[in-house]
Length: 66
Image (cartoon, rainbow, N blue to C red; front, side, top):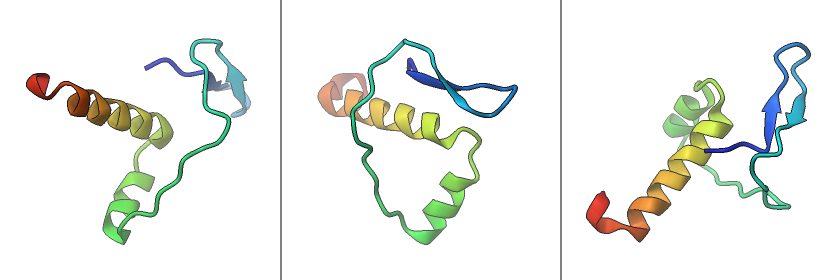
């Protein structure tokens, strides 16, 4: 999945990659505590969540490929 912003490894700040347009506001959800702990432990969890959501949407829209 293309990211519009990527973290600069030198200074930790985000830089624009120009690869994907992002929505103007984020979506947030509250998770059960056990799930929250696991998700927060994932390195680069934002990208993980974006990819997980994209995969779930793809499977929802294309049930034969799931």
